Image (cartoon, rainbow, N blue to C red; front, top):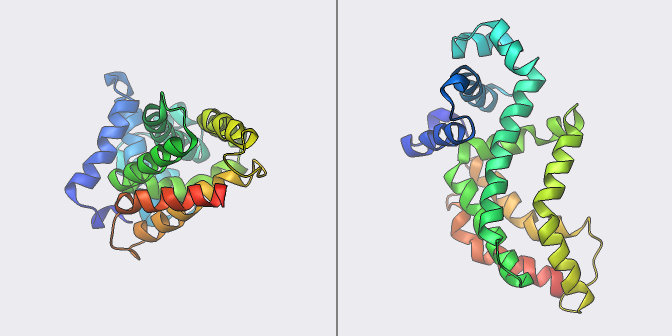
Length: 215
């Protein structure tokens, strides 16, 4: 979803996310590079965007970019983790205190689809760059963050499996069953192939996810 197709409200959401992540005035140059990188990566692709493109768009020197991020892969990873961490914080807050497997699945899907709906520019980039980050030098960092993000949910579902409330499924399969439909739909919406925002169908995704774990 190129930035030019976003509403003013949607475009401003990415600005607020970066300001939350990098609020210090001393981080203004870093924030500027990431903000312009988000637009360039989404519109032109990660591979096609160069350090010189980032320099021109952000009005920061090449030296400043390398000082903050070391290389383009560092820019991609920094931007990816800013967005992913914001999403993870939202999920953690949404599921906090819940002790029922179905309630957690419903809260997860509600938060996941709400974040994508509110942050289409960042969500597009997360999908765009995930494989690149996972296969690059920051792959171990990504795996660690995802493990920490889903550990409370995995532990609760493992308990439910032991109690017979859900089927005993391979742990690697559960994320696809829980998030697969919502992610597939979100990708279509971000690409302009779906009209209704993902949050519109949060309850349907949650119901389908729970049935896949119990049916």
